[in-house]
Amino acid sequence: MRKFTGNTLLVATHNQGKLEEIGHLLEPLGIAVTSARDHGLPEPEETGTTFVENARIKAHAAAKATGMTALADDSGIAIDALDGQPGVYTADWAETPNGRDFVMAMTRAHEALEKIDAPFPRTACFCCTLVLAWPDGHDEVFPGVMEGKIVWPMRGDQGHGYDPIFQPKGHDLTFGEMDRWEKNRISHRADAFRKLVAALGR
Image (cartoon, rainbow, N blue to C red; front, side, top):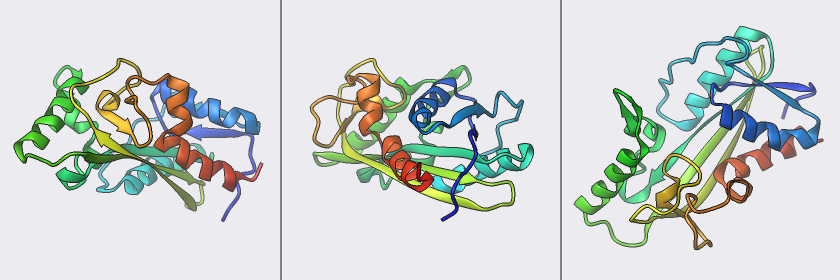
């Protein structure tokens, strides 16, 4: 496995919240972060059908454009009774002409489960795949998973996306009810980052 030896990592995102979260995780390692937005990079079209394919598209596009090592993630929720949907289309389910509406997306997920009378518990998992890409085309992949179940009605106003309907395994609160940093400590992204940090060997 190739080691990252630099001090600044390009995070292939335009999401300030995600940049802050990743920066917080890497700060103890002495690694500073900069974003795709900081470098004026466009967001590449995510044409993959898996999390790793989309993460690779973003990471390699950023690395190639800047000559820097780039980190990208692709994440989403996979609901077992819906054959893994929405999966890579997690954000697409929330798209409207006026921006993303995750209450609509969560309602769509619930209604889809009701329509097929899905048995309880309605198991699901949040998935995160990190890809660290170098300008020469090499990459390393770090997958993370958080298992849990879908609950209804929505609970909590913390977090983002589908957090209010996802109750992680072994916990009584939904991601939407959890403190942000507690969620970040146990999340699918944290699982992937633990693997990344171990690989960085610092």
